Image (cartoon, rainbow, N blue to C red; front, side, top):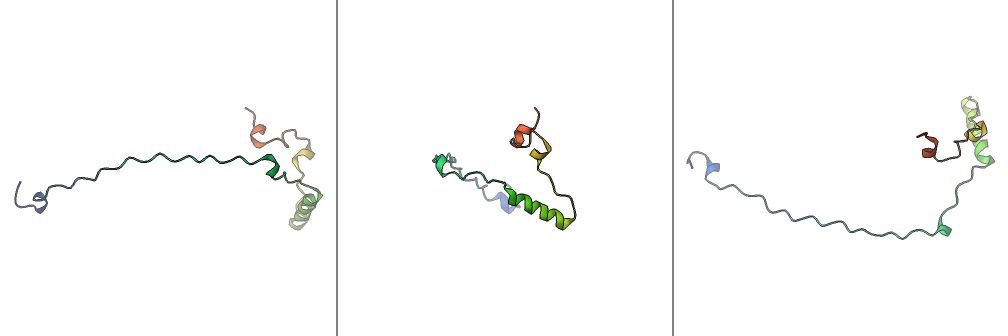
Length: 84
């Protein structure tokens, strides 16, 4: 050990020992009974009228919904529409 550098006089400090991490506690959520689940929203005539009005405002033709264009995949969920 040379006496020129001040850091050489002091022994190096070691990092404190890290404690092992606790595993996360898994909480089991109770499943919602089917009766409590909300029914799906129905797209009635009101929705269509709103679309029509929006089309009138923008000056574009009203968007026709997919089932009206005889598209079988329209009513299915999105992942079912993709061809595998």
